[in-house]
Length: 187
Image (tube, rainbow, N blue to C red):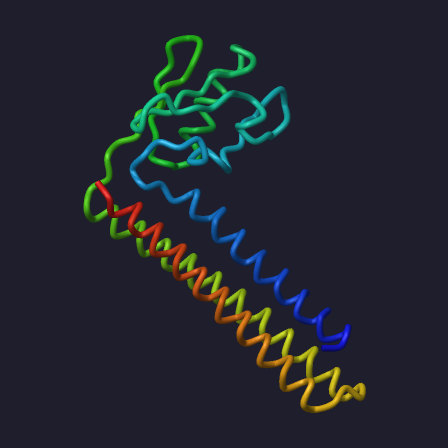
């Protein structure tokens, strides 16, 4: 394989890796009934006049599978953090003891579990679209190489390699979905 061919494969692989990383990040936001600090990702707190992610204002941990504890770095920001969690529409109702916020994570009912599986399926499909877009772009680059004088056989081998890469990443996405679905449906 020529250097140009390897460059095309590396670029496609990098784009496909990004699609999988994005999928994993989105999966973390889909709660599976067990408390997880990542459930609060995306919560923005008004902290001393600035809007900052909750992780920059407090320690977040899970002492057990049904509870999240939010311990502010500055106790005076407790109410602002409480308000931000409530306004984030995550379905959480934090309770305060003056020092920390406790969030009880309710168990999921069957209907909610099915909705979460659908959401995970949509995220999975988005990742597959990202992978297919990377394949399409890599194939276009391969065809440009042919116009630039690379032999036709070399370009055909490159396109086959790109398809093998795509198939591998698609299988990886399917496996991640299976694991997430199992996680969501496990009571």
